[in-house]
Image (cartoon, one colour):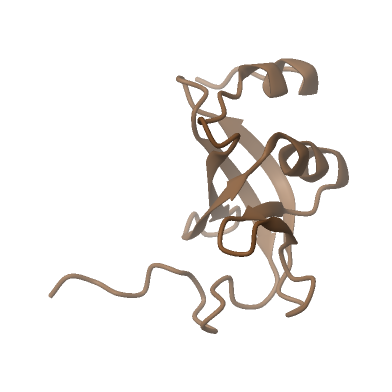
Length: 113
């Protein structure tokens, strides 16, 4: 079951934490592979939904971070979902190049032995 909601309702559904952020899972729309987890503020969420280019909030640098702005490894938004509690976002994206800053295809390449 999937409910399609308007942009305004989508934005109103999202519950940001006490730091004004929400966790975001980026997933390949082609393969279903989980690429990374990042954070968004209300501003970067709106930028992403309106522009179609994934834009995050860097907690370490304390600034807006457009995915691929320096590396060229961009994420084009295909679909956006908000979970049932409104506290997590799932982006299905078209990933260009590796998703991880290490050069790995995704950020989940270390597995418990």
